[in-house]
Image (cartoon, rainbow, N blue to C red; front, side, top):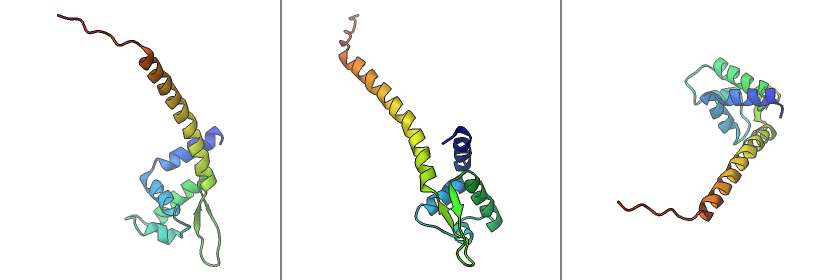
Length: 113
């Protein structure tokens, strides 16, 4: 995932409404009306949130007769997870090295007063 796409995805996920929409879509596709139900905001506002998620490549829309379901793009989320995991694994390796150094160091004796 290129840097601009990564920025767009994280900016899109910075909003709690959009995160809730992504969470809802993780269980299956839904229409704007279905996605708007739990929110105290207009359907137009939910549509704008979906448009942000769509521009970030996190969701797609299709046409099914009169329905326009919104779908989560699992591959895009997997790319975000891979990016995060790369740095998580590096940090874990650094902590393991630190743990090994600390375990190999002799314990310091406390000075008596």
